[in-house]
Length: 471
Ligand SMILES: Cc1cc2nc3c(=O)[nH]c(=O)nc-3n(C[C@H](O)[C@H](O)[C@H](O)COP(=O)(O)OP(=O)(O)OC[C@H]3O[C@@H](n4cnc5c(N)ncnc54)[C@H](O)[C@@H]3O)c2cc1C
Image (cartoon, rainbow, N blue to C red; front, side):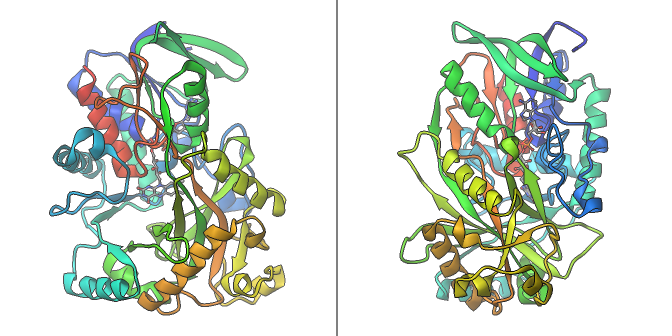
């Protein structure tokens, strides 16, 4: 299926990590032949039918939101998290700095940001003006027991992200990168701990293509498959932290100050009695709650904001981080929560009023119709999240909401909506060297799927870093 039987490099996954790896590789080593295998479609052919049908159709063979060129990035909100110059912590986005070092990671982010700008990203940054007002919000947060992390953000917007990634796709093709779309890698050939190629499937046909270097950039959507692959081939992994939570939706008016000054306020706290870390994540002013479907049909919630189409609600994730170090595969814990929650809603995601959760009752569809916060995800089933969300995580989230109410009065309004499940599948870490090579010679991994990163900017930067380190 590929034009050749052997390539210098095979990249599995065309998300931001794989795409930016290829972009940098054609600059640093234009002589190398690269085949990029992606199980989804070209970015310009990707379309989530939910926008028209009003409900998730669980697209076969793969969810359009998560798969295809630019990966989860195509329909993502395109909030590129940068960093604070005076700070040695990156707080969000992952752990690239643990491999590349802090200074190098800052340079990588600057460089990667420059590429996003070249391909048409907006020049404006969010969260950099009004330092006096931001420090007042920080003070109020600290009094309530919360930390506020303020990082400059470049906001593409979902609709603009799509166009930008299409330009990158065209550029790569023009510069000799070969693509295989609708092709799913099923396995690797590894002998004497050295990788030799990949086995992939197109429709129902199985093919083999060889390379001395293989890069796995399979994202969260491929994290479970990657773990199975590691188990099968004795590639070293270690369990990491999992994030379990909900998507929270409330009126823009409650979040007006935070939205205007920060666009995305990253708040962190450790509510009693469990002291678990709870944080806000992926805030979308005037945005929309969405769904995403994983292998095995697990449906999760997420959210995005469009540059040109606006709602009157803000949505954000409230995530609890847990370190289940005794579990060999903590992702199973999250998956079980998701399976139960989906099963309660007939395969769907659940939405519940905060006031109903507090009163220990489910939300009925007719109550939702009268609710002052109108859900932007029309397909979510009104129901009872507390039947499937563990007590501990629910307590953590409810405690956190009360704390946030002191920073943004109205954050604990009973009409605010909780959607579940929102989980992040990046808990199993593939063990990597400082040049991002796995324990198998010639086999590398980047991006979210191997637990290295957790966001667009770091995933993209991890691709750039690997291209520079590889040869
Ligand atoms: C709705 C939504 C909104 C988001 N908003 C933001 C945001 O505003 N800011 C931010 O920083 N992050 C955001 N994210 C997260 C961000 O999109 C990811 O962190 C980022 O895309 C990770 O890049 P990646 O290349 O590692 O993986 P992905 O983007 O997940 O790409 C992996 C690719 O690999 C392919 N693949 C997987 N397995 C195989 C296989 N076996 N064979 C062939 N191909 C395979 C998949 O089809 C996919 O295209 C959002 C995510 C979602 C879903």
